Image (cartoon, rainbow, N blue to C red; front, side):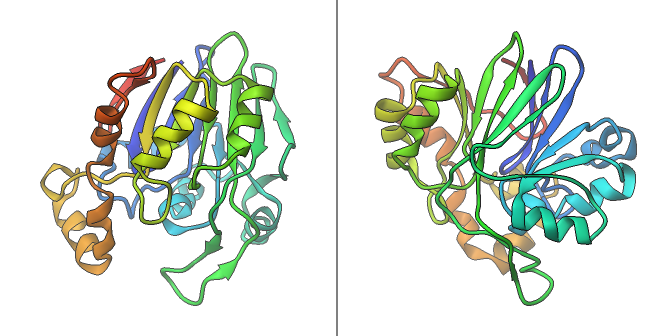
Length: 256
């Protein structure tokens, strides 16, 4: 299994069998996403999209995908799925505890503590149900818990007990999701994973794939500055534990 980070909370997970699953597409509006991942040939190779909620930094890339890969399957929580169906997307609706199956993997929707709206950057935001996380089980490979945007919650213990994830993609940036303190608590008291990949963080302006766009985003949305560098802070906080914190750079691919 390979995982590529395209920025913020957007990842592409590729199974050994070649299935590519994109989590929370934040693409053309994402200054951290290298341009090669916005090209038609790359986006046409995405098989499934896992959408945790409707906020622009998780769902705005659906338009990029639809342009080049109009039949890509989007898995989303029921109310958000209905909205996307109305917009012409190929959607498989789930709700908490529901599972989508293919021959080589299954993905189950689990709880998250956050909010969910859609279209907040282009007009009056529409409320589109509740946020979620996912557990991705690629048969014969790793089981990955994708937290989505969430605060720490007792449900993480239930998720661990039922689905037995070995890897977690965990929000840790604070401000709109849990911070390093809460993420450390989740990893030491609720989850029993061997590896965690921090997410919901932004790069420094000069480190972004598009520094000019990054500077503009920070100027228009200054709180982004508080979401920079927390992935390294989580690595420092977990250094004396048995959990490996794997910080993935934007555009980088790692083998799990």
